[in-house]
Structure formats: C-alpha cells, structure tokens
Length: 341
Image 1 (cartoon, rainbow, N blue to C red):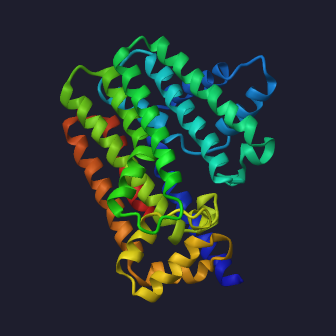
Image 2 (cartoon, helix red, strand yellow; image 1 turned 135 degrees about the vertical axis):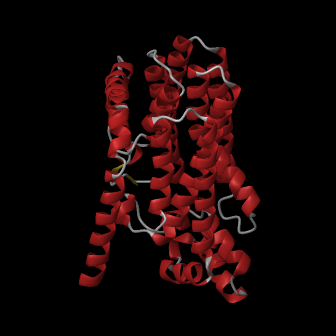
Image 3 (cartoon, one colour; image 1 turned 120 degrees about the vertical axis):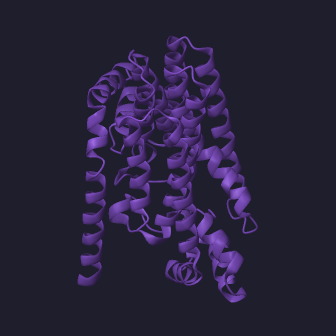
C-alpha cells in the first residue's frame, strides 16, 4: 500500500526531527552520561553468565534513558558538583530496567523498542529472576549513596510501583474502570519513577525545600504526561515510530484513557464494540475499535490531558534556578508536547 508506506515514512521523519531537538539536552550532560554508561556494565557483572547476558540485552536495547537523564539534569540544575548523581542515575535505570523485564513477562510481550524481549528470547523464568537481580543491585547502589532520605524515597517508590502493577493487572478487562481510577494506576505504575528520579536528584543536590518540591512536582507531571502520551499513541500512532504495534494495549485487555473516554461519551452501540473487544481481545476488530475511539473525540481528550500535564511540569520549573539545566528540563516537556501532533 504505497499511501500507507508514505504516511509511515513521514511519521518516522517527524519523530527523527523531534528526537533531534533533544540533542542539545543530552549534550549538556554528555560527560555525565558517559560516566553512567561506563558504570552500568560494571554493575552488571555476575558469576552467572546468563545474568550478564540478559541484563546487557535489555540495558543496551535502546530507549532515551529519560529517567537517568532527569537525575543528571535535576541535580546539575540545583548546582550539584559531586559524583553521586552518576550512581543515583544508574540506580534509577536499573529500577526501570527491572520493571521492564517483569512487565514483559506479565504482558506476554515479544517486542520492545523494535526488538525481541528478553522473555521471548530466554523465557519467562530467567527474565523474572534477572529483574530481581537488577532490583537487588539497585538497592546495593542505594546503600553506597549513604542517604536515608534517598533510600526512603526510592524504597517507597519501588513498593508503590509494584502495587501499581498489581492494580493494573486486576483491572484487565474491567470496562467499568473510571478515569480517576486509571489515573491512580498510571501515577503508581509509571509516573512515580519519574517523580522519584527528580525528587532524589533534588535531595542529593539541594537543601532548599522549594527546589526539591519543584523537582518532585516536575517529575510527577512529566511522568503522567509521558504515560498519557503513550496511551494516545497506542491509538493514534504507528508501529514504526513506537517500536510496538498499534492497539497492543487492546490486545492485552487493558483499558487506557482513550477507551475509558470513548466508553463515557460514545453512543451505546459504539460502546458495545469496545466492550466486545475487551471481553475477547483475540478476536477483536482493531479497525472497528479505532473508528469508535477516533469518532468519539477521545483522542483529542487524551491529547489535551497530556498537554495539561506538560504545562504543569513546565510551571513547576519556575521555582528552580534559571540556568541551562532548567531550560533543558523545559525542553523535555516541550518534546513531549511535540509528540502529540
């Protein structure tokens, strides 16, 4: 289909341009990132070869590493000049990587970032156990930071993230899930690690309560925007730019905000199309569900919700020192907004 090919190529071109806009952001902390990228493989060493093999596979599988980036930018924004932010950024990356390993097993995913998942390559049991290894290694690094405040933030966040995963699992197939309930799921499951990244960066770098709270708020709002943007892309995007298939959430029986909103405002017959698809994802007609979601205005609603979170993230930055690192954090929020177009 030449038309579809041209649309996909245009989408890839736009996404490449957006990511290119982030080049100055990464360049600002390039030396710090090199240190993080050097520390990660050193911390993945193990006497068990499979641990290193799977760990390296997922850590090196691409992605923007936004969470460690937030640690580096947030700490530098508040004037940090030590080296512990490198260790903290690595902790955050390991926590995130562990959740990815576990998520892919729970979701039975076979593709992430355009390549085979660890569970598809090595099986579920090794993936879960290596995820556990990464969690434990992250906590070993936390101890080296020698900060009870940071330990408390990260241990609480890890516990809440795990609860968020279970909450999401219990709501698979639940067509009565409200928007408020869904927002709590994504706060726990996704946004909290972004929040923990910026919050701990603030605790590490600053004694100013307003600065610490500003970074914490930025991470939360940015994390919510990030997940809402992902929800939107699952029905508005394409596999070439996402690294996964459009409609993956539907195939897993997950109600995200586009479906929740469509169920709330669409005519009863259209709502039945969604309910039937959720009840039997294997036989769902994606094209029919997409038609309902798009005709209901749900995509515009989700787009606006993500946009508002981006604005909230930017507003939080006003309490931070006016420097290039704050500008870079604002650029990240602008990048998220640009993806919603």
